[in-house]
Length: 224
Image (cartoon, rainbow, N blue to C red; front, side, top):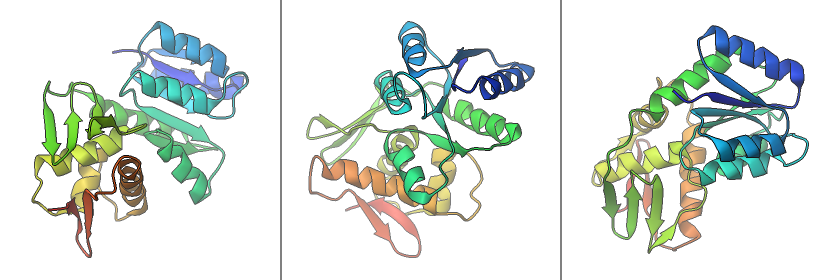
C-alpha cells in the first residue's frame, strides 16, 4: 500500500499523527508546508492525504487542487473551523472528509480506515451513462455533453455511480450514505444532502437539465 501523506505545519501535531499511524502499521511521509507537499505529490503516489489548510508557502487549497489533478486519492482535511459554511466549502472544494481540531487520534484512524476500504479494490474498466451524463470508472471522471464535472469528489462519484447503476430506482438516504461512505447510517442527513447539492451545482455549470430528483420522504433518484 502507498504511504499516507501528512500535511501539517504544526510539528507536534504532525509527529503525533505519524507516530499514531505507524503504531497501526501504516507507512507515513510528512510535509510541513504546502510547497513541500506539492513537491512530494509530484514525485510519488499516496493512499490517503491528511491535509491542514492553513499552511506556509502554497495554501492548503492549492495542495488539494494538486491532489485532485492526480485522480481519486482520498483527502481528509484537518480544520479548526467548525461552522457549517466552512464545512460545506471544504467538501465543495474537493475534500472527501474533514476532521475538526482538536481531534481524537482514534477518530482520525477510523476515518482513514473508511477511506482506504472504499478506495479498493480498483474500479472496473467500464463506464455508466444516462442521457448525456457519462461516468468513467477507470478515469474517475464524470462528463456531460463531453464536458467534465469540476472537482468531483470520491463520495460524489459513488453517489452518481449508484444512481446510474439503477436509473429507475428511488434510493433512500440510508442506502446512498452506506454506499458512498461505506459505513453505517446513523440518521444524520446533512452530509449526504450537501454532497447532492454540490453535484447539482456542478451539473448546472454545464447544463440546465436536472439529473437528480428529490423524492420527498424517501430519498433520491435520477430524473426520468
